[in-house]
Image 1 (tube, rainbow, N blue to C red):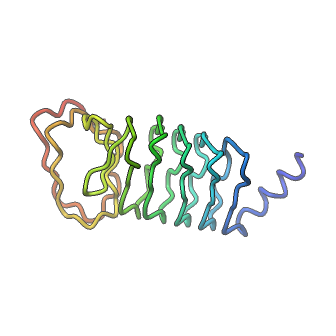
Image 2 (tube, rainbow, N blue to C red):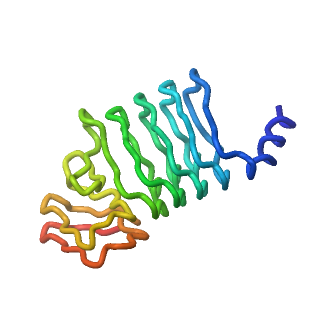
Length: 178
């Protein structure tokens, strides 16, 4: 098995597309596949490990499975070509810095029925109660953004790499910026 794993690891620069077989429940270790553009993840996957797709700089498209419950720390960190993400209602955990460096991200959506996450009309990701702003899509076309009065906390790197954002209006209730 070690020889096979080494063979795949050495072929990373050649891989542009990955289709993961149905029946797999956990994904790990596709980080640094620098030319990877597309990943097909089956609905059997419930867990995406920390760093799973980090530094896949050409990853443009990934469809998250409908039963996904966990995305680990740094899972999509520096996926700088990723333009949109749609989180399933089943998602319970989004690890820290999971979307840091996703500088082409224009829109984040959450499936209706999620009790953990919410997105607003600008494609901004929040905790369900809108008390925490988790991620602003860095490539959003908007030049200004007003943080809702409900927000008490802004996550680390929430606005990192925001290209067009020139002005942010903070609210009086804000207690913590990480």
